[in-house]
Amino acid sequence: MEDRARVLVVDDDPMFCELVAVLLRNQQHQVQILTSADGLEERLLEGDIDVVLLDWQLGDQDGLAILQTLRGACPTIPVVLVTATVSTDLAVRAIRGGAFDFLTKPLDETRLIATVARGAVHHRLLDRVHELETEGQCDSVYEGLLGVSPLMRTVFRAIQNIAPADVTVMITGETGTGKELVARAIHRRSGRAAKPFVPLNMAALPKELVEATLFGHEKGAFTGADRRRIGAVEEAMGGTLFLDEIGEMPLELQAKLLRFIQERTLRRVGGNEDISADIRIVSATNRDPLDEVRNGRLRADLYYRLNVVPIALPPLRERVGDVALIAAHCLGEFSMTHKRNFAGIDDEALLALQSFNWPGNVRELRHLIERMVILNEGPHLSRSMLPLEITGHAPPTVSVKPLQTLVRPAVRTTVVARAESDVSPSPESIVPLAELERRAIEHALAACQGSAQSAASKLGMSTATIYRKIKEFGLQSSR
Image (cartoon, one colour):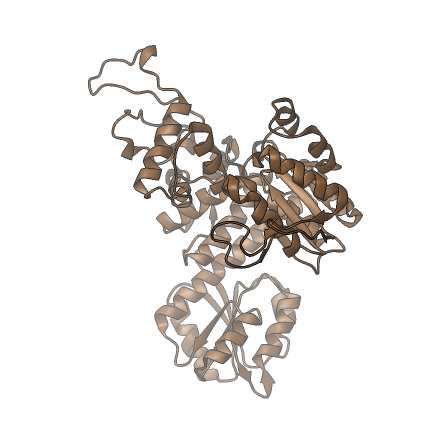
């Protein structure tokens, strides 16, 4: 049975070992006992242990030192440190040292059983991720990015080659594909890694504050400027400035950014002194930058300055094999975060996840897995737990009123308005998706007292996206 864990109890007190063994065997777990650390590492390398319960003081040996050795040799096996001494300092040292959890004697039976169960789930999930990595025949994690698909391996190679070159980079890709993660990976792999990485989302900034936020301002430069503030460029001095949603920058500010890139000097708002700045600029957009140039929203000369080296991130629907890997990784992560007992994903659920189009890409998949973990108990993520939009069944029709039923605007399926009667809807009753989206955002803003960030959270979209939609639909928010 998958619910059974294989537990190794390591303690120099035989009576304690036998007591723990009885408690865990009553839960159908398999228990083995060691009364010293002799042969412990070799025992774990045999590969049939899910969880280790390790005494903090094992004879004259320090359990924390033993923990460090085990973490290096068997990093996927959770180690729970056990001690008779109740100390916050010891608990902190244990967790920082890589312990899965920390228990005190005398053991609380309920907590012991729960901790062993969570540890076993954690071990199985890590093993599953390792299997997926092996199937992909490459490392699946690269600077926080997950992927085994050929498209993502190409992205990883591009980051590795581009990062040391210290050139300006433009990242393109749909919302939720991980553009900021790529920018951070470029920074960490560059010669500027020891200096700051400063992200700035242009879509989240009020137009009148863009220049001051970017370049800083002097005291008295405008109403409310009660003291000097340095801008994002100076914050990033020596490091990397990440300009997200670059197409949202006002045209008049684009000219000033272009001047800065050309001359590498800035002037604070209200100042009269030019300041030299040594930074690397990485920009990103979820639109086609050439379309933005053609439509007059992005200056051509700025585009060519920013697009010295482009990186195009593929949407999740084109990344063959990555959905399973990311879903398994997220299930393990959120099971730990929310203390749920999920051991894996059923084949039918995995097939449904892999068949979905994922318009919100990796971000949408992560949010879905977290929601499923919170709403369900496990031990497996099954197809029946997934929402209808994922499993492929047509969602129920949604009437135009009340708008409270619109939790999130539809993306893939046309939503029609219908009367309360059973009369089939006519073509004239179809409400355009854009209109439903506008109404949903308008309703969310009203319900959140005009807060765009709160509305974005409730709607399941990013802050950058909702600011862009507010601008597109001509709506009002309190920022």
